[in-house]
Image 1 (spheres, rainbow, N blue to C red):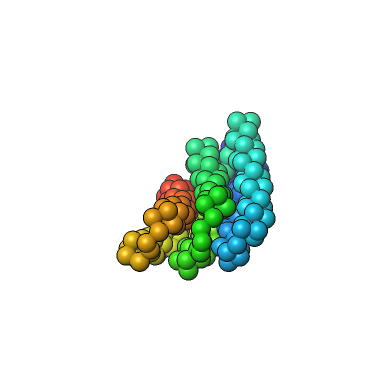
Image 2: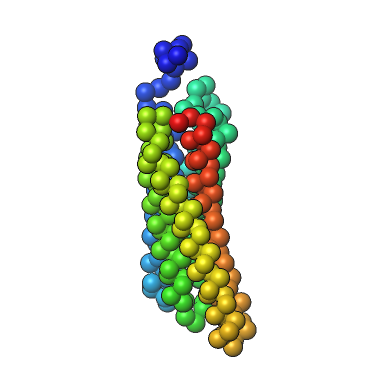
Length: 215
């Protein structure tokens, strides 16, 4: 029954929804900065943008800790504490991976970032957009799960495309690049970019678990 004592206690605007939305927004902002970093393709631009991503990563950590603290002090949550905690941590992992990407670009100083790097960065940006849209739908999940299912499907498709881009790039890299050090640098940068799309897909899988439980 909807009109139970516990349901009457549930806040009309549960505080976890805006917190999760803010966390997803941080990932999107970091992804946008990553695209800018790769487009700049120079050391000065990388230093400036890396600092912005670092600041966003720090904000994400603080927000994740805030969610954890509120989980420990809130009697009624909109869905299972474990699911909220898993979703918050995985959203933060996406931002962490984006930060790792920019850090490697800054430290390794590759001669030239390939088009494939920009392609993957744009996929990450698109994925974080879908994540934000999906998180926005959580508070109406029981009424209409259709959109959120679509967003999760988009995340999985992006991850599959990213795998293909990475595989083609590595094949071409070993076939054409003769500088062994440059091979190591580019392969590592591209690997972290591809891994970031895996993390976005993991967010989708957590949201799909929530759909199964509550939609």
